[in-house]
Image 1 (tube, rainbow over the protein chains, first blue to last red):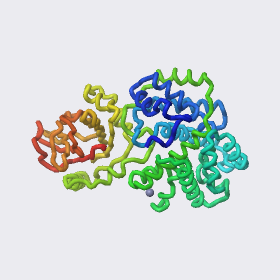
Image 2: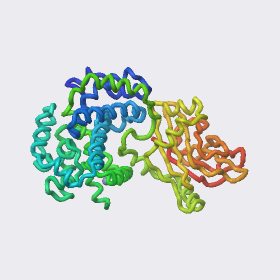
Image 3: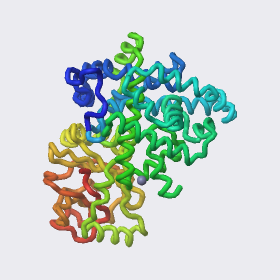
Image 4: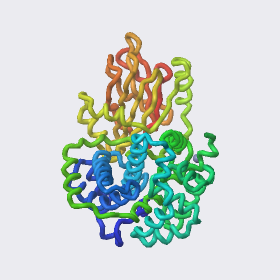
Length: 194
Length: 250
Ligand SMILES: [Zn+2]
């Protein structure tokens, strides 16, 4: 369960994140500082990919990191790695923010969508250009064009599959399927075991 | 949404591409579909790799801000999922003991069809248990145990029961809210279910529909717990069918 995501090039020399989160669960602020040092960069990266705006991203990243502190006692190592838990939390909060901003703006849904998506080709390229991990970049290339676009728009831009379908002019069922088989291919390429 | 469609949503769920409503429906599906639960865990892990790949270096000031703000943030009590997640379908699918079936029948008879309904949201009951003034050291020790596991059940009449087990401490805590008073002259008695044999785990305090109780005695491998209505002072063995029965968290 723990091999899914390694932090750094040589995981063996890194502090064990699960162990640190266990200490955080007991209220250990020093351990939390170490957790921060490991996860703050990835959390900010995820949030920023979705929100783009730097100030807003830092605000959400801060909320996520504080939530890690608050909810650490509920973390269950038997359900996945701590990094997965934290990045899932970060992505969820970033997406929540995007959607609440959309709703608050009370804009026509379509107008909001169009404002964000016409340049999706560019978006996809930008994201790929920023990938720091050669392995992820390589594995993304093993996806079909549609799989890659769907996964990228959903994950890095926080679009719902309905919005992805609209942006790519594809049926809803196709997008659901492509998100699934695209991620399956990614999982297999990356050797992720959950 | 029909079930066949639900199985296809693992990918969309893993990248947070479902609407809130669909997310809720799918999370309910995850409780009953082991295949989707497993696949969702794997695809969520794969998605996290996409996140890791875009790491950014935060300003040093962010570190100070975060480390400062946590000093004023109270941590949650253990138990319950840290994020909505699939879990425990296998545990729930385990065949109920005959005693449990009897309990369901009895509950249906007594409460007009309401039977035990399990879900994964422990927050409310746990937070309440955490706040409970009467929480003894024993209760706190179980709730704070690193291996504390939680299960929530909706009991008859809209009451909610939460059972927290720490296997390292071999003790269990039961918290209930909104429970009706027992009939006059009666008490609620708690029991451990040892493969169909009931072992007394103490009495609930009379007169309070919201309470947190440390179950008497060790868990000792019990698979579930139940509640019966007994004469004041309690009984050595259940005198009737249980009004509620919960599996203990694995
Ligand atoms: Zn399924």
